[in-house]
Length: 116
Ligand SMILES: [Cu+2]
Image (cartoon, rainbow, N blue to C red; front, side, top):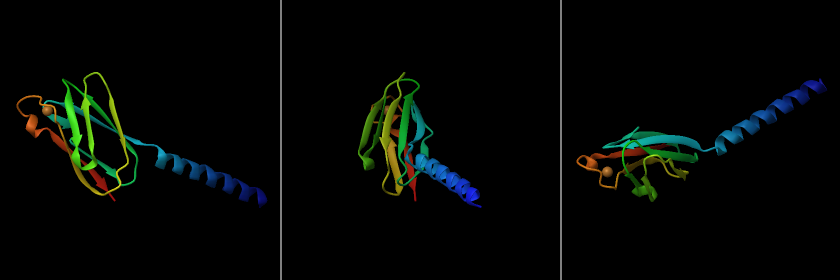
């Protein structure tokens, strides 16, 4: 009887630890850029979930600008550009290329969708 209670306690704390680790570990979201698109162009996460955007380019330097969240960086071929953030509001936040990359540049955009 006493032994069974102890086993239950150990299992319970192990599960609690795993759940806490999952909540604190940033989710990596990979986005690759090339003329004139991001792939994927639409990514989804949950509000309050720490994420890391892992940005790569397949061809040339592109920009990555998300005005609503105050983010702006460049994506350089051969490098991973990592952007950590924790969205604190629900919504659809557009991102776009702000480094002119040729005809079609104006259409190079996507969105981070943050759900409740
Ligand atoms: Cu561009």
